[in-house]
Image (cartoon, rainbow, N blue to C red; front, side, top):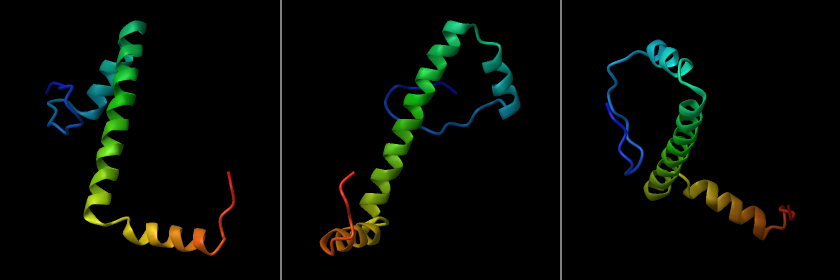
Length: 79
């Protein structure tokens, strides 16, 4: 599969994790840096999408209510 720059996607790969690890370990320094930068951005976008899905589905509502309750009860302190 190929990466498209329009958000995180999970595509079926025609290689195993071991094959991917081996390919990455053979990258020249510049390509390894480029890959690392891309992968970090990919993971960040995937994390953002997961949090957004959790918010939309209401999975974080209870945690938000507890945080509000703690704040309103004075159980929070400035960072």
